[in-house]
Amino acid sequence: MAKISRMEKELSANNTGLVMFDSLNGYLHPRDPAKQKFLADRNILPNMQRLLMGARKVGMTAFYPSGHHAPDGSDTVLRLTDTDMDLGSTSAPDAVIKPRFYGDSTDAEVAPELAPAKGDVMVPKHRWNSFFQTDLELQMRVRGIVNIIICGGSTDVGIASTVFAARDLDFGIVVARDACFSARGNNNEFFMDRVFPRMSRVMNVDDIVALMRA
Image 1 (tube, rainbow, N blue to C red):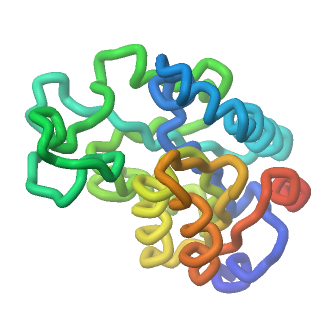
Image 2 (spheres, helix red, strand yellow):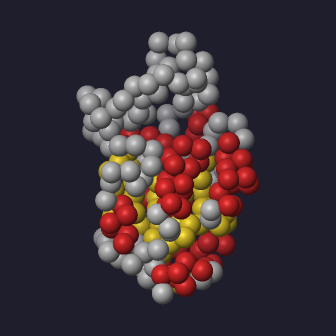
């Protein structure tokens, strides 16, 4: 039965979960005007809202894997990298890659427009991959979920890491193309066009919602 449900085109609430990856204030309500414009130009927050509303309408569970890093940095590992997070030089003193936000801040709270409802599942995470040492897989398996829809950002960081992991855990995957984002060059388009299609379906929000079933 599980194999059949992965091969069905429709997205049933009985076997599909919506992954609202890092749907946090700090990412969706940035203080930087340039980042605000970037998100607004791409309609990211309204698209995520439409996806969530579609899931709510059919009774689909939403999962919220969200960065919850210790304020004292005790769960953060520093390492040498060729670039900083935005693909710039690592010569600046603050170029070491660290979490953007910490668990005790309003930036690390889910954006109010996407707030979880009763029955949804919050999943604190400490690494890019939403499945790594979290209970996300367990929470899905006990609900009979074998397919996921994923949205959020960044596409080339946490979304990619989570999609790779989901594929290796044998989930069917749908990536919401117009509800994911990355501000790093053409990275979003590269993953949507060249990487994700080999392991998932890449679809726009309206097409995904049209396939949702109770």
